[in-house]
Structures are given as C-alpha cells and as structure tokens.
Length: 281
Ligand SMILES: Nc1ncnc2c1ncn2[C@@H]1O[C@H](COP(=O)(O)OP(=O)(O)OP(=O)(O)O)[C@@H](O)[C@H]1O
Image (cartoon, rainbow, N blue to C red; front, side):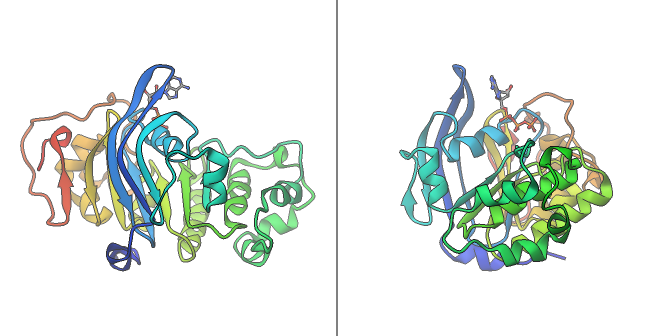
C-alpha cells in the first residue's frame, strides 16, 4: 500500500527546496549541483549506494559543511545561516552515529535537547515507553537500538518543521529495525521527514517519495518510492540491488559510487524522472 501523504504533500508548498547545492569536504566536491524538494508531509527517502553523498547533502542543508546554492525552508532562504540558527528555525537532525551523551542519563540527554518552551514530553513518553523506564540509565550503557530511540526522541521533543534522519536502522537487529520503522511512521504523522535509509524494506514501508544520488548528483526523483523500488532496471543500476531486493535487502554497498550509465532504457513510471547520470530521461 502506498504510504500516506504522498499525494497530500505533492500539492502543498514543499517544506524544503534545494537548488544547485554544491558542497566540499577537505577540498573534495562531495555534493554537486543537487536540486530537489521535500513535500510538507510524509517521508521522503534519500537513497543511493555508499559514499554517493547522502550524509553530505544533509550536512550541507544545515550548514555543517561549506556549501553553495540555495536552501529554502518553508519559503525562507536558510543557506547563508549558521547551523544553530537553522536548527532553531525548526530543523531536527538525527545523525548517522546517534551521538548520545554517553556519560549522561537518558533523562539528561532528553532535557538537554529541549529547545521549545513547551517540549512535547507527552508525545515522547507515548512513542518511547522504554526510555521512561530507563530515565536514570547512562546513555552509554544502552543498546544501539535504545540509543537510536534516544536520538529520535530528542528530535521529536521540539516542534520542528522538518526532520533530517540519517540511517536510523543502521547496524540494528531486524526486530529493532522494525521498532524504529514503526516509530518513524508515527513521527511522520506530526512532521515531514527526509530519511537516509539503506534498508529498502524500511523505505518500502515508510517512504512516499524518493530522491536517488550517485556520485554526489541527483540521478532520479520520484513521488512514488514504491514504483521506483519495483523497477528492477532502475534499482539495479542506481542502488545495485536485484528486483526483489526491495523486500529485504540493503542497497548494495560494494559496487562503487557511480551508477552505470548507458545500458538501456527502462520504462519509467509516469511520475518519475531520471537524469543523465541515471541514463533515463
Ligand atoms: N570527513 C571527510 N573527509 C573526507 N572525505 C569525506 C569525509 N566525509 C565524507 N567524505 C567523502 O564524501 C563522499 C560522500 O560521503 P557521504 O558520507 O556523504 O556519503 P553517503 O552516501 O552518506 O555514504 P554512506 O551510505 O556510506 O553513509 C565520499 O566520497 C566520502 O569519502
């Protein structure tokens, strides 16, 4: 079934609009002329093989790495602003490595994240009952899945316009992956999410639309992640997975950064676009 909000989000003003975004790390260009928008509702997946620039794109959006190009949040340009101001404007960031304060308790980790005058403690208690029980436990002694919940809870405590969530299921056991996915599904009822995710079953379950990167560039955008995942040719070329892999495998990590180009044209769904790097127009 199509995840909710694909259609609703398609017509409202996008919460995030990125145009011509280019970013460098240590002198190397890691994001090149990236343009896409994130609808105001639901989950948009940011996909691609390892090292194609997904994390860098997210970091560039919030100014954690130097960038040029335009980034517009809810109609206002934010690309000249420092990270703390962008976060204050209502962008929640859940980094790939979770980054909990290991020497602080769960409760302290959450309290430190409270930015709003009225943090949404009730929502967080509802979504993360296990964290309530572990309030006085040192965050560093939590399992990976529990730390991920702390990291998500911190972002959800505040009223955000957008969440940027980077590989939340990475390294977690299947049962915990499912718990994280269910939490994200519920969170997306309250806030739009740009989600970097390698687990294509999770993408299938959660994402309305998708943006695919290769070699630091956007090579495909779609407002139907499901149609993209069902397209064997495209997923094989852009993610390195076989037709059915969307039902249980991760995007391939081991075949380099650039999608192959020029090996035939698949019939794209009407609502998808693949540019020159994806060899389909
Ligand atoms: N701190 C850094 N110093 C130098 N190069 C970096 C650094 N961080 C990332 N890169 C390079 O930037 C490129 C994009 O990396 P990025 O982490 O954005 O990719 P990704 O798509 O998120 O990968 P993954 O799926 O493995 O997390 C890669 O070539 C990577 O080697």
